[in-house]
Length: 371
Image (cartoon, rainbow, N blue to C red; front, side):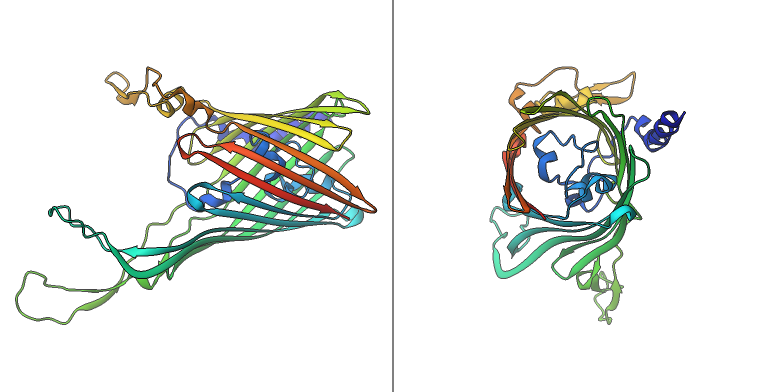
């Protein structure tokens, strides 16, 4: 009966997974979706593990399983010279639970402001102006996780989110929830998590303050009217995750962990994420993983397949696979990790590689200190 109750609670979180549509590119604060830590190397299948300081990102309930203080720093060389940083620290509070704090920062460097090209002329006017601007994203979070029984952990997190470009910004609050149930059989864990739940956010700033000419076609001179434009609000990138993880091989020398996640975002199609981690003597770790989109039309489109209009269903489909089959390597991941023990402190060094298809590859490196 107790197991039935726990599984029922998991299913409540999974109800949104039944939707079968995508709203590509409709959410804001995309930096909140960039994965970190070991999970990035395991095909982003980590919601049921979440057994280190990166639980502040994947599933706050994983904090309840931690017994040591940890600090982790993750650096990510993202696409297009974008840098992504993640810092988190966890502090066990005895039987009360575990507290976690995190900082996420995404920076793009300085960019030059260009003039607008006039398409009606043969000359290019999109030249540099000598003026520059910056764009960056930031999130500050606090999380809490606790073991409610010897097998069930639950947790939640709150984070303040801000996006900035030039002198404009958008901000809001996001909430995370999660649970993990350990069956006790071969390390089998069942988990569910909801990330980035919150209201819509919109940009505001001086760039939206303009002078409006009420009579542009009238040769008479009229004084312009100062107005402020209003931007369209966009939702946060809400994500529902359901995951399983177990250890088919586990002995004194070796451990093989298999993780499987089902993901439903509010701005893309559902995915199945598979991850593997092999550990030798709890010192050397090899990881790999892959993410598959459940919508086959989307998968065919990723290979350059030609779209065809289906008159019966009144929609565009991709019945054939394209020639760019190497693009299917998109989201193929791999990584390596080293665990070192120095006195009372532990040091974990992790590297993750992620193939981004036409956008090339990204590289992540992280350092975790336990004490």
